[in-house]
Image 1 (tube, rainbow, N blue to C red):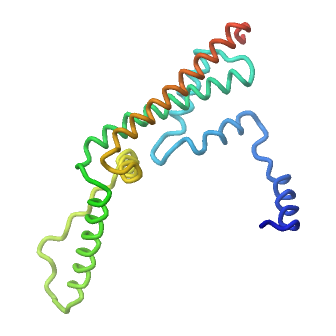
Image 2 (image 1 turned 180 degrees about the horizontal axis):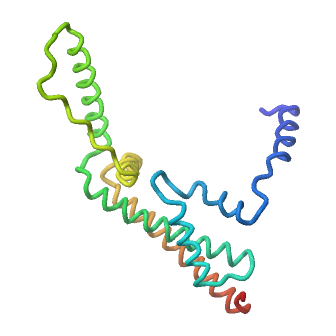
Image 3 (image 1 turned 180 degrees about the vertical axis):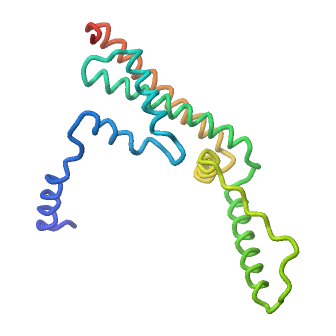
Length: 185
């Protein structure tokens, strides 16, 4: 339970942290959670500007709808990349994945202990390091873990449908509003 003193302190803090003030700052702030590691802020800005150039929004509501179009489009593009990486992953279940991780950790632990047994002879062939995952591969693996393994493609398909509905709902509303008012010059 929050005390009256905590509530008052929260209110004072909220008055000091009012967020960005400019339109550009607000737009940038709204997209902070949109971009994942490895994604280019510049590429998203180009995409957003191309949508602005195509639809010429007049007013903040139309600009918001154009931004929603750009975000949904961006996420749909990301989803296509994730799907490609999901297909490249070996089929596995969460249980199988956890077992494999546990076995790998145990093997690594055993290898570490073997190195300290006083054996002066180094390994004849050092292990090659695992190649670093690309951001899309990392996202795909995370998605597989979070979506119950075998159901990954079904979850991707559901997510894709939601994004398409978001895109076309914003597109229809933008067209409805623009039909009522003349475009901005």
